[in-house]
Length: 251
Ligand code: APR
Image (cartoon, rainbow, N blue to C red; front, top):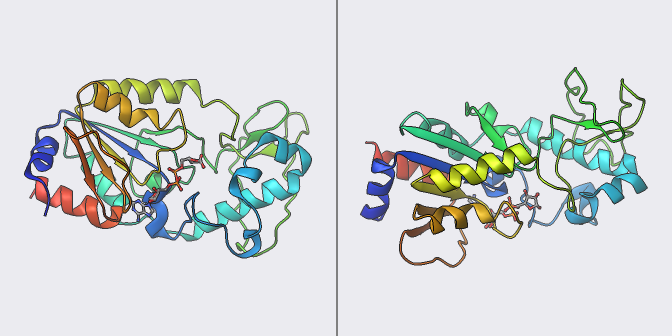
């Protein structure tokens, strides 16, 4: 049963921020970071592959892992949570979507003006000169095609392309994090969907909203501890909780 205070908070919100993590893509079949890797990659740990050092040491292995992830995303479809988020944007006066995800499922569900805090799989750049290729990457091979894939060469300087994602130890795009913090400060409702809230500075975003007196809702089958007042949780899958909440608030 949905809390009437939560439904009222959504109905009366002037500026809603939705902040998503890997859990929003889980029902599309995309493993979250805290899921163990499977198949060809089961003996690898995501954190050990998602670094500039790993790429420098073995570009083909790291590029191959991201090509595997790109192929999994390519074969996936947006789920009911992605669609509900795209629908919500048209129901509130002001809406901001911030994601930690590097997949394009929010885009494919129809969301626009998305702030990607951790970059995007579909936007590689040169590891040497940072140049972004003019043409998009080709359609990826089958996920199980194999582990090692040589990264393409930069047309600008010949260096290897690297995935367009933020690796551990790298700073987030300044414009994206600044925009995200500003939205968290200005909103009156922040809905956090499918994130473990353990990776900073992104994990600070719901905290900022709550501290500046916004209502905060966590949608996660295993939500973390709440502050108490103005802090809500729906311990359910995003693809179930979001459509139910929107239907209740905007019948
Ligand atoms: N609906 C909602 N939440 C879900 C679902 C679901 N169907 N399935 C799983 N979850 C939740 C899990 O309970 C978990 O809390 O999604 C969360 C996923 O957490 P992580 O795997 O840690 O992903 P995320 O929070 O996005 O990680 C943040 O860490 O590894 C880095 O850069 C990477 O962007 C990533 C960041």
